[in-house]
Image 1 (tube, rainbow, N blue to C red):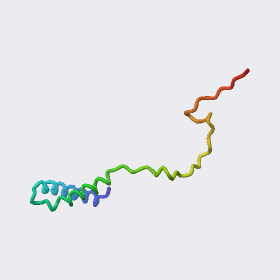
Image 2: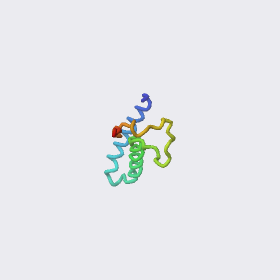
Image 3: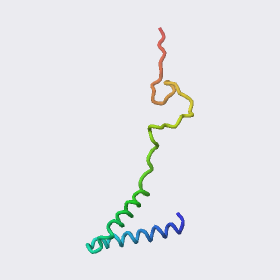
Length: 81
């Protein structure tokens, strides 16, 4: 992260901390929606990325494998009579 972003993150964290303390006082009720919005926006950046949409799978370029060559399939045996 660049130094500028680090400074902005630090200043933002301080502002949220001060705002959180201020909203404890009922006289500062006007700050509540602002602090909630900042907390909501900050939570987006900490979330994990969602997986791709399962309804639209990408076409596979890998060659097709047979049942006997997959790792989960049991080995096929030939029966001699």
